[in-house]
Length: 492
Image (cartoon, rainbow, N blue to C red; front, side):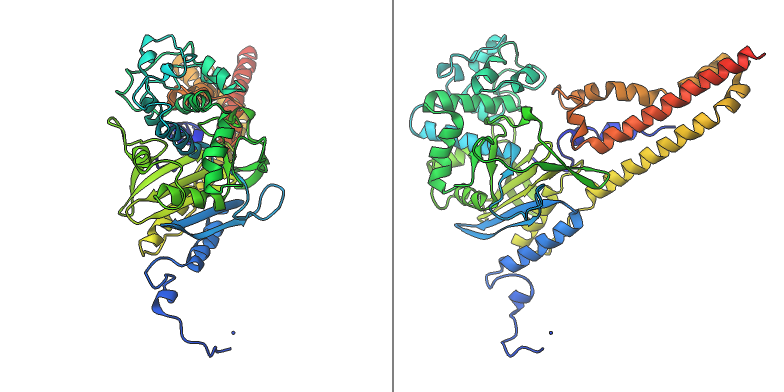
């Protein structure tokens, strides 16, 4: 579940390479060694130490806003906000944040409350309780509830009409849009991360729970845990617009409506304070909406992959974590628990860039929980955007140079070998072809997920601009060479 490059940008590493064109003393007692080290007497990081680290992280990452919570066993150690939202207000521990795919762990718990109640069974076909679930592939009849939660149903972004599904305004409509889809593998035989699994799970909750999905989650999960600042979808709680970075300049943007769908895959809006209650529950403390065995089932990996039910497994700094990241086009988040130590962490930002800084901040917090000094996070996004910016400037410069030298080029090439003439004309065309194929290329790299031009103007904007500049430079050079060549030939 580790994500260094976020969202679309994580799939565009190949495309990046292809865009290059040719005070007084105190009378108080001296602080203890633990206090000087930023830890409590038990060796755990102190709230002051965590706060200092996060304030430093805000400076080093240059993020506009961030909210963070750290829990240990049954207590919240630190919950706070840093920076500002798009309306200029300070981020606090009670600021609502979109958490994207972290929502999947909430959806899994909603399903498990129904399993505990005997309303559904994990290893029975989904269609038993959800007759409306039909696909063009007969194997879909064998998809079980467990398959959905483990992401092993065989449904992938490339085998269903994701664009039609995400255009739906209800979970019923979403499920209906899957009717023409097929499976990429027999159910239970292959792991493939796909939002459709959790939208189906959310619809299953509606049908068997007898309430709209968001209301069911509110009553059975948020209310028992005291998560009063949380909701599914933004009709009840509306966060401010998030930010995207364009070569280091943060710009407020509205999230695409297709990604504000109040479903089970990414619809949860919550706060650092509420996430503290959630993480405490996940470590087996406080109020627990599900039985201990159900919680264990959620955390256990499937037989064919490391993904559990809304949680993935990962090793970090010698610790075995359960993690899930979430990426929208203007918000980013990551959550993690360490079952062996009882620590929990959530890092949420009101921004999205080509590089995801939330994981680096999480890494520092995990190090602190293990008594180690955290590395300073940040720099990755800045370097990526600096590289792209310099590439765009170089492409623009080469384009201007190509146009200015086009006449001399034509004079030298006219009457020469055809292969040399052709080579000089087509040199500037690869960036043009890449730009034309850009959405399709990213779609292929993202396992068939539909990618639109609008989406490419969000956190992938630096890459998109760089590719556009390179394409414009190449096209201008080619066109001017053709015009100059025609002029030279006609004058002879």
